[in-house]
Image 1 (cartoon, rainbow, N blue to C red):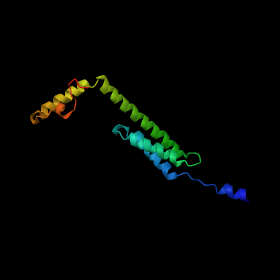
Image 2 (image 1 turned 45 degrees about the horizontal axis):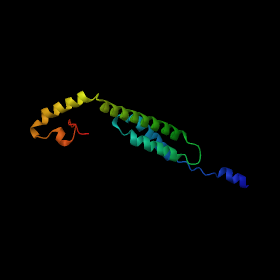
Image 3 (image 1 turned 45 degrees about the vertical axis):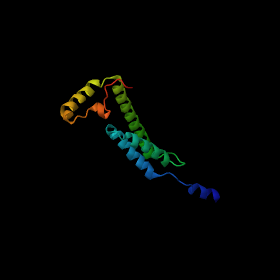
Length: 126
């Protein structure tokens, strides 16, 4: 009798709500990487997917959410790294010069320059 009760009364401490939330955050992470929130949604999706499994195997919603969150987070990291590379390599210098010219054209009457604000300083300071 004792074995019978242990078999059917095994605790299921997994959380289907967290698994569904991980799935939603994973979808948001992949779909919204272009506005820069995949760092947050991807990290939260991974966290909720891992917390939702409990002591049993991971549910399919959590597994899919974990995968999508990791993909969205990887895409966001790749885009962020590529952006840093573009700025550091000097490939963005023509665009920065164009921005400075437009700024000076429209806001030159104020007497405040981008260098005064600490933006795009052209001096030799490192």
